[in-house]
Length: 178
Ligand SMILES: CC(C)(COP(=O)(O)OP(=O)(O)OC[C@H]1O[C@@H](n2cnc3c(N)ncnc32)[C@H](O)[C@@H]1OP(=O)(O)O)[C@@H](O)C(=O)NCCC(=O)NCCS
Image 1 (cartoon, rainbow, N blue to C red):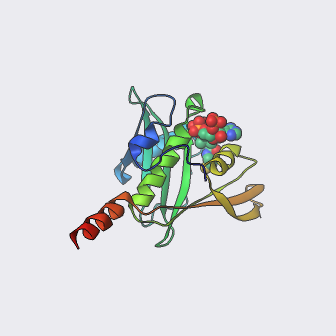
Image 2 (tube, helix red, strand yellow):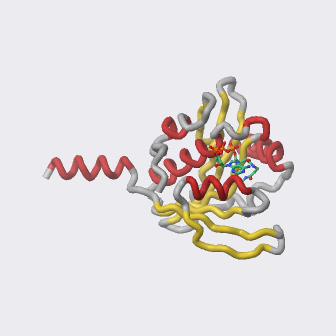
Image 3 (cartoon, rainbow, N blue to C red):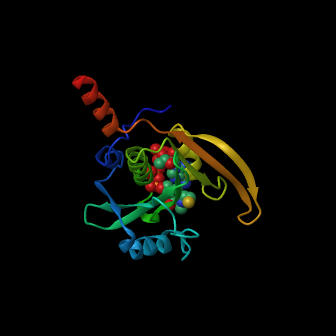
């Protein structure tokens, strides 16, 4: 696995971008912001089929001057699995490591919430970036099929997650106490 970057906290994640970046978690009350970013990036109102999901997690990346430049969101697929459903970076800010920073931050958030596996689907011919980055980040392809709707192959990438730092600390504390 590629261990070039530490991805255990938001500040570790922010540091992989090549420009000063802040990543924040936003709640459903900021759905308007996600909608605006989604339209700017995908030129499409559709974000995901439904927000009626358990464990929704939404992240926004901001530049130093507080411009929102990218987002990434996902939700609980089952007790062990976090599904990263959608994300993107505004065109004029691409290739600055922002998508990688958002991925690292979402990995950190999913790890901290106790998930054991992080997965996402992507269309490699339509959006090659997420395929290239997934392989570079140590993900493996665990499913592949053709989607007539999107006229591309749909690949599912998966990565096992570590134990959360908070649990590791608890285990150490308990170990020391006994
Ligand atoms: C894919 C996307 C999110 C990448 O955002 P980004 O901020 O430019 O990505 P990063 O700068 O973090 O790139 C990280 C790595 O991903 C890979 N990558 C990113 N864009 C790529 C592209 N167009 N082609 C090939 N590889 C790409 C590279 O390995 C890159 O590392 P490098 O720059 O060191 O070579 C962005 O191009 C985007 O929003 N595209 C449209 C929407 C989309 O495809 N969303 C994902 C599917 S839902």
